[in-house]
Image 1 (cartoon, rainbow, N blue to C red):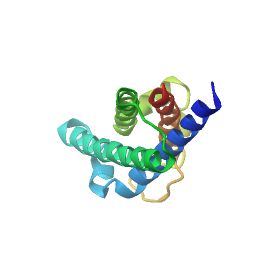
Image 2: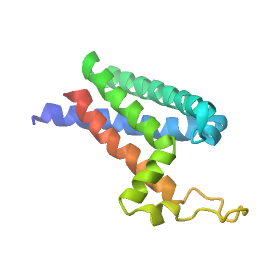
Image 3: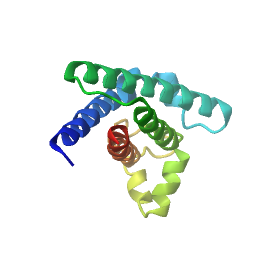
Image 4: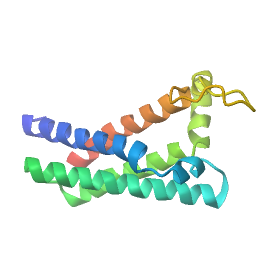
Length: 151
């Protein structure tokens, strides 16, 4: 890999990571956050709405990065990468698939770490295992997305 491709990867990943943080924590509405993991049509729609704004944020970040750095993004590779990001983000944010994956990989105890007891709101924090696994899933896929975008 040339220095130019390494720099392109770093710039694309940084833009995607920044967009992820903004979209997942600032752009996502409370309505989407509360409902995206629910079963049925309402949950699917809320999750799709979140993923739509998530990808729009990523597009804006990539365009800004490309504008200010002079990096040329190739449309087919960028669309392919953002499709990977959208699909994997939707998968995780529907909650049940990621919980099942945690069980299959032996991470189910960690997934439940910090979860409030049923009927109690005794651990209102962002420090749950489910949140940590969700974020690490997204960031891992952002790495792959950046590789696809610079392909």
